[in-house]
Structure formats: structure tokens, C-alpha cells
Image (cartoon, rainbow, N blue to C red):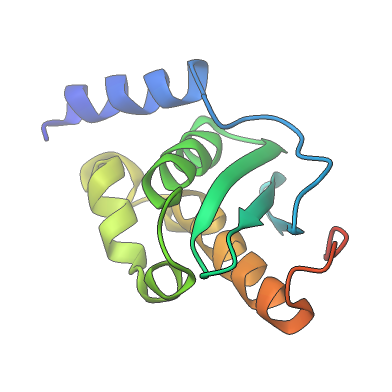
Length: 135
């Protein structure tokens, strides 16, 4: 993907998210952030009995890259198994967002994936019994 296409893709994800919002009945919710730049993402998960993520929602604030990445990761991993999430590489996310555009801000680009992986771990520890937001 060329630079301009990547920028347009990021802006579309940022401006038109389909997974942004609260999830009061989440099986687990985890808050992550980059203290240095102020990006914050909270990931909410609903998980089936077989370990498949049936719904992902996110809330947050921060730069276009961090929030666009949260939308992209949510869209990509909804319907995935917990194991698929745990093994997803940060490089794949950076490539899908447009490496040339986001490589100067890798922590912003991978905040959502890291937080999603923390949510999976939190879910496994608590077996999905209504965990609260972990920080």
C-alpha cells in the first residue's frame, strides 16, 4: 500500500469506527496506555464457551494512529480464537496499517494489540467471570 492509501485508510478507521463504544456486560475489560504520549485504549471482550471472541469493543482517546489501530485490531480479531490473538504479531498490524506511515510511531500502532492480548490473559485468569477494568 502506498503512503497516501495508508493515510486514507487510517483516517477512515479513525473517523468511522464500528467497534467504538462501551460494553457493560463484557467478560473482561482492560485499559492500556502510552504514558509518554497520552494514548489510552480500553478493550472490552465477550468470549464464547469455546474460546472464540464473539464481540470486541474499544474506548479511548489519543492520536489518529492509536485509535485507528484499535478499530482495525477489533475488526480483524472479532471472531478469532484466544490463541489466534495471543500469536498475532505486531509486525502484521504495522504492515496492515501501512508500515511507511506508522513505523515512526510503533507504540501508538501496537497499543491496541498489546491491550487486547492483556485482555485475553485477564480473561483466562478470571475465566470470564465479569472482570472489571484492569490497569
